[in-house]
Amino acid sequence: MIKNTALVLEGGGFRGIFTAGILEVFMENDLYFDAVYGVSAGATYAASYLSQQPGRNLEVNELISDKRYLSYHNLLREKSLFSWDFILEEIPQKIIPFDYKTLQNSKSHFYVGASNCQTGEAEFFLLNEADKQEFKTILSASCSLPLIAPVVKYKDKHLLDGGLADSIPFRHALKNGQNRAVVILTQPENYQKQPLKNRWLFKWYYRKYPKVAEMLCQRAEKYNDSLRQLKQLEEDGTVFVIRPEKPIEIKRIENNPVKTRKIFEDGVNAAKQNLPRLKQWINAGSENTMPRKKA
Image (cartoon, rainbow, N blue to C red; front, side, top):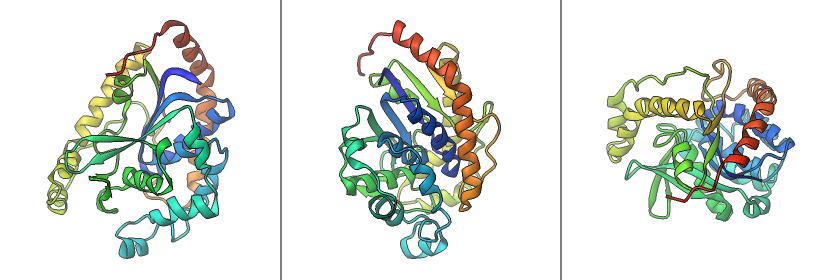
């Protein structure tokens, strides 16, 4: 267990399979962290990492061509392009069993980020404490992309995609007990998010949730500001960043497992290339850091 260090995972739809490849190498090398913060696809792939099930993410990837996983039929029937009943209930409980007990007993605290549609703020939920129904609800909320998935209700909160409010939650991690963070991105260096187009559509569609439209309109600016801060923290050694060397050539919504498997292998290769430097960074931190007080 790597103390006083968080693992922070960006989302990005099916680009997140790059992250799954990195996490596969982390499992092989027994690299686990005090806390894990994941949003959207990053959170779903982190679940199999923290349940310590090598190969499971790649097994699930083979099912993305199944119409029950992703289809316009789902959109018409369930108002969601993705069927969370299939992805987060039938698959983990019947088809490719998920080890809920190992996740619950993990010494890594696993926080899943979602965006609160009422406040416009990020919400983080401790998945280790979730039962099977909460597991499904929290992860589906974190992955529910605007327009193609409905708002998810959990307790008194109305939630959507975790990337809207906080796409890369490294600041949250550093404020809540960790001195340092390993951050996995799904965009290459020097990437800049472009401003949202057709803002009027989102403002109209989410007229009952004006904070959602506000998050969408501000997302590019906030994301690019996060990248600037992340770069500074990377330079001073507070964070270690792993990112793809070039843009991941894949659609945000992809149902071809051959294409996504290639991205997974890119993630494996990126992790192996970064592993010697990462281990040096971890060792330097264990010698030079003291626990940070929680904010």
